[in-house]
Image (spheres, rainbow, N blue to C red):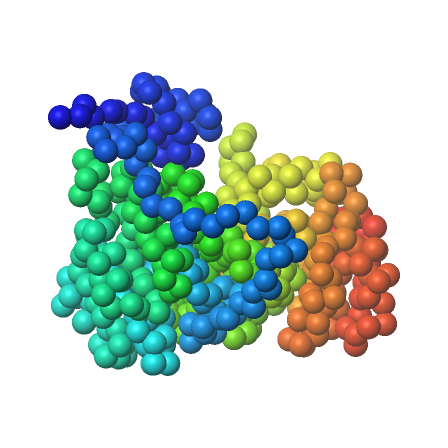
Length: 452
């Protein structure tokens, strides 16, 4: 009998080591090395390969027109780049209860309603539980075949037998291969099962959705190689206590990256939100200080988001800094700029900043709206209700241009705003292009003198 070999694999980056260590030598994280027992048949846990073909000169490769199958859900099609490509493997991650399984079952119903066959593999629910959820969501197509299965061998057999156009595996961490002695969810199991499923669907030309758990840090559980194996990585985000969800593209070999789709969670499932800006501004009270509208861009979609700030006199020597939907490091930088280049004294106040509606704002162009909201709260003077802001703030207090300023301007005009504040470089390029008044300032101090 062949002797089994043991290696240790980093659960973050997939680096291998013949002996255990407290810290991964490749990514530098502590406590990520997990034991992995290799199959006696091979020193490598991955056996699946794509079809072998000889090298071909690049000009001799025939042009390939991508034929997309619409998922039937507008916001999902948006983030996928227009639909599902044959052989496309998609990894969907998100917190428990955020709506991943709901989105997948609704997608299965829409695809099946178009006359295509879907294999829905549920590794965490029974057939009865899936049927109950399907009844609530209106998913009752006879072309949806559901399998409550955890065995990789059985799943690949079902794919070969039913020849589906779309395969959904919920979740990949629950699937295991029999000849790998480690438990489901370990690095060896997740990597091997994903490799075989991706290779199989690419060979057969059907679409694949893999639903994945996420870690407490918010990344998809398993080594980073799992994200490299697939063609598209989606993250489902949102506050479980709010009804709105955001589907964000992190990687897409067949479309744009950093694209987002917005959904509303209802009793009958997820519904597309066609104009998210209206939703994010629906309950705004413009008469209150501490509010400013940020003109942001997510992928190819402009969004107007309300940024709220609350400044209160601190009772401690180290004031509190809290941020929701805004990067905390970016907030600290904006506060330092306000302290150094304006008459304000934010260091004497506890500062709380939030992007309304569960939105996550990461782009630098939101700096100006964050600064205006903070200054408005400190001065107790409301910012103009008909004004939006879009500019990055440099460390010297100067305003710097934002990308795709024209899209931001058009979105503000569409929603009835009367003026937009931009950096001089953007304002000069957009002058005279819209009925909205375009205003520009050189420094953050000039903006605050005018509006706060």
